[in-house]
Structures are given as C-alpha cells and as structure tokens.
Amino acid sequence: MPRYRLTVEYDGSDYVGWQRQDNGPSVQGAIEKAVLSLTRETVSIRGAGRTDSGVHARGQVAHLDLTREWKSYTLQNALNAHLALAGERVSILDVAEVPGDFDARFSAIRRHYLYRIISRRSPLALEARRAWWVPKPLDHDAMHEAAQRLVGHHDFTTFRSAHCQATSPLRTLDRLDVTRAGELIEIRATAQSFLHNQIRSFAGSLKLVGEGKWTPDDLQEALEARDRKACGPVAPPDGLYFMRVDY
Image: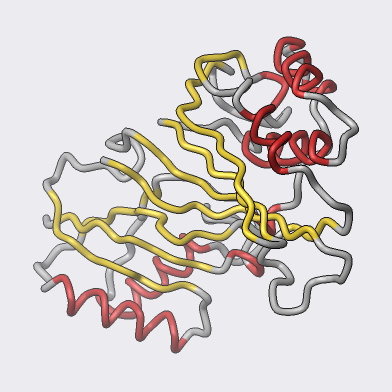
C-alpha cells in the first residue's frame, strides 16, 4: 500500500481547524473528501500539526495511504481539482511517495511558525483575517530582546492553553525572532514541537512589551511563574501561519 506525503497550503479563516470535528468544516475533512471523490477510498490523513480555527498554513505536511500507485503530479493535480470544485480554500503544493514508516507527525524534527502583526492606525482591508491589527505603535526591538528570554529549554506552563493535552509543559524553543518591515512585524518561532496556543500566547505577551506595558524582565517573570494567569492576552488566530516542517 503506497504512502504519500502532501504539502498543504490553506486559508484557515472559515475552518474549525486542521483536525476533523463535528462542529464544522475542517482542513483534514476537506482533503479526505477530495480523496474520496477521486479514488472512492475512505482514508484518514495525519497532519504534522493540529492548527486551530482561523490559523493558516503555507507548509502543513500530511500523509495518507492509498491502495493503488499514483504518479505524484497526477495525484496533486487531481486533488486540487476536486478541492477547487468543492470551493475549499485548500491547495496541495506538493505530493511525494514516501517509505511506509514515514509519519507526518512523528517523523518531524522541527516545525516553523510565523505570526504576523500589522501595526498602523487604519484598520485592515486587504489583510483582514490574515494578520493581527494593532493600532498602537510597537517597539519591535524591545519585543525581540524580550523574546530571547524564552529561547531554550523551559517549563512553558505560563504559555500553554489550559486545555493543552500534552503530558509535559517542557519544550525546547530553538528560535523566537521579531523583525519589522514597515508596518509589518513578524514573529518567527522554531521548535521540534509546540504546546497548544504557545505561539499565540507568546505573541500576546510580546505585544505588551512592544507597547511598553511589560519589560523583558516582566516576560521572564511570567515564564518563571509557571502559571497560566501570568500570561498576557492570547493573540488572535488570524496572524498565525504554519510555515514548514523539517524531516
């Protein structure tokens, strides 16, 4: 039974998230329906990360098993045709046949995320639901300085959802950089794995630093508190993008 790796881009605005759920359309469900329409096979695909409602992806990775061999480009084009016909905001960027022991989730060694903030007085039109609009000026240098306090191996209890199902709050954060180009501020995070709402929690707390309400020391104190109540407001999902996965 051949196994295929899919690289997927999607606009998560109108989905309940990556994972199939009963309360609305999911990205996983959209792809599985496209596979069923194409192959008449009912499959369950596994993604590298379970993005929440409203979160986007430019390089989500998933795998699935099919009963027959497909040429990669044929499978890619056919799935995209079925997704477009169904009106889905999902695109298959690449398809590759992989060994049977490849697992989109468990074979991953590093995941990369981007959080986008647009800091300007006027509300967003073209970028609505694509970024977090912050009408106040933000000091991105202070945000970057503070972000370095979070890099490394830590107990991230403060920065994970109360509903996080991970068995341990310990994670190693390889990178958390804050840069600016005009009105756009980008927060880039890299780690082997992340806790539920971890990056959005980072972004919300770093915004407080950018506004001058918190100092880098305040952010470190929040980390060391190991208390969810010490976290700043969680940033909205609009600005979060799952960028790519390393294997």
